Image (cartoon, rainbow, N blue to C red; front, side, top):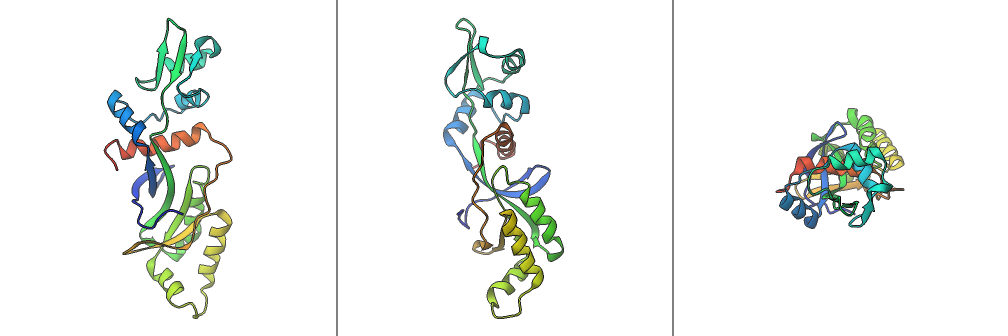
Length: 210
């Protein structure tokens, strides 16, 4: 479970403005900085790289024409090309991993937006854990008055969120308070689309973010 006090960054991902908890891989971030390489968010390039082993030579003769053209346009630091030996060596790995995405309004999501917020958050299921942050007044009533009549709309929110694996939280002075924890992120497979998602986050964070 992610800590309530974990730093959250404002990002625009998949067309939505969200807050995200991320892990930066310092070795790769430093390596990219040394070679002057930023985010690599070319879908075509990442698709080719995804099929190459890391730090192992791949004969040019084993690659098709499309892969060869794509790799030859890669910026410095992505692959090493040894023409005399006839090989490519992939050097690129992810510099950052998005751990959690939160759909979050200025004052928390109001009841009239709950349903759409859960749908918006569920779109991040292939990439990371996800949650919504509801307005503090709603969650405060639910937490501080457990013996009061249940709000059917709030119960429906929790039911839908649990079905989609979406966490429900409120933002307090001490950080996030989870009313329903997000489902653990367990990818069934790894893909170039996931890699692209993290690279798009890295482009916005930049090498100086920590």
